Image 1 (cartoon, one colour):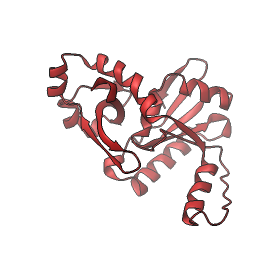
Image 2 (cartoon, rainbow, N blue to C red):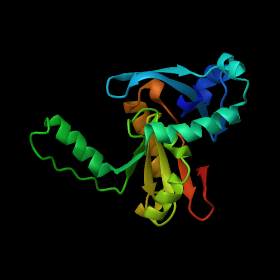
Image 3 (spheres, one colour):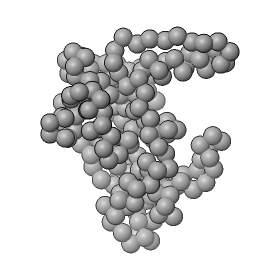
Length: 202
C-alpha cells in the first residue's frame, strides 16, 4: 500500500473539517494531504482512497513519514509537465479540431502551466524536489506562482514586468469565474526567490 501513497495540495482554511480527521502538513496557506491510488487507470479513470486518521493509526506512523513515502511515489507515479501557455492553447485548439487540421495559437505572456502528466491533483508538483529551482534557472530569476486550481499552477517570470497586485487580481478573477469550488486552491499568489531558494506568499 505504501508504494501507492501520493499527496495533493488543498486550501487549508476551506478544508478544516477534512484536516481535522486526516494526517497533513501545512504549506503556507495550503495543506498537504494524502491518498492511495487503489486501482484503475488514468485513461479510464482511477479510484483513490483518502488517507484518514484511522488508516494512519493502522499504519502506526506520523504525517512526516507518510509524506516521505508520498514524496518518493507521487513524481514516479504521476510524472510532471511544465508547458508554455501557448503550447497548452495550441493543444486545446487542435483537440477541438479533432486533430484533422493544424492549429495555431499564441499567448503574449511568458506564462507556463505546471501539473503532473495526468492533470490530476497536479498543483502538488510544487513539492517535487528540484522543480522550482529548475524553473528559476529557465526563467533566469524569480517567478510568481499562480494557484490555478488543485490540478495545476501557473509560473510567471517576474521579468515579464507584472506587479504583484496585477497578478493577484488575475488569480482572484479567474478563481471566482472559472474554477469549481471543489477545485479551488488559493486567492493568494506566491513568489519563488532564486537567491534564497524558497517560496513566500506576497
